[in-house]
Image (cartoon, rainbow, N blue to C red; front, side, top):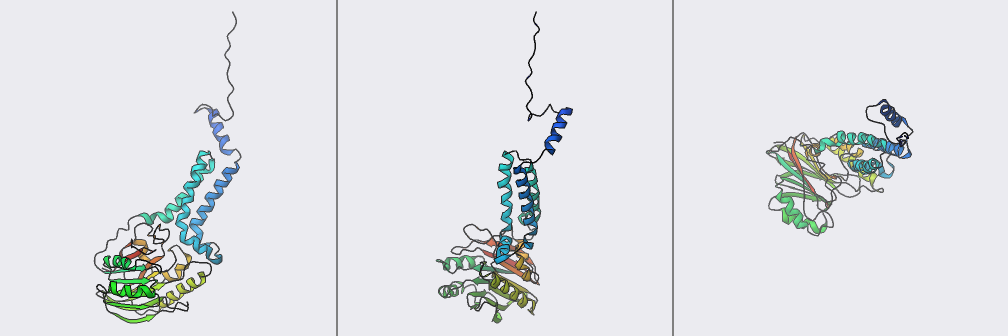
Length: 334
């Protein structure tokens, strides 16, 4: 009788041995230490680069304002992580796990912005800043939306010859006191004194200062509009930030608020020349990132309420019609 033999198929090199066996453990160790493929090196380098940018973006070079531009949009850098993680995982790239590092860094740096502030506003002085938009085809609608916020003090930027009178007529009922200089203006329910322009070194007026006599006491109010973040105007914008910083540092009134389109984000290294003198509490209190521009798809916060001497009890971004910027409203004191 012929002996019956069983034929065994050889195991492929890539198939792992049975779970829990010594061979399995040797296979796992060998897989861990085998030479990395090119894709592993690329993904690991990408994870390291994103982590460095998220943590140290303000230390990177700034030729022609490129570093400042990166500062302003740095929260969006985190989107690159899931975009790379998906194809890396599908390709069974062992370095894909390293993408957890920049994801964790993003969560630590920007995650607190997504949490509720825990503050609530009750009473106090309500202030609002709005870029009216020079090409606004419906300025009256924008101004009506501004008035509906029931703010006590309103700062407007990008006022043109055509919209100045529209603003005066539309806001007259709620705001009996106002002043305009150049392309900026201030409307208030409270009496204004000591009104003067602020020289930002631009050659034309884009900032004004006044004392508002509020129920909480005198408050120095600044309204400013700095140049856009373009390669040919970065130095002008930074000079304006520094001059604003000097002006508020020399301000004799204890309570100070700045309402402005500063054309810079709170993550911008250049803004520190101002926020060291006027803390950015309103940005911290606003729920979420509080992006204000462009209105169609807000990607960065260019509009700010900065203050000192008075606490910010709440703040929010307000969608207004007609403008390419959302407004920012905050409650001070109370």
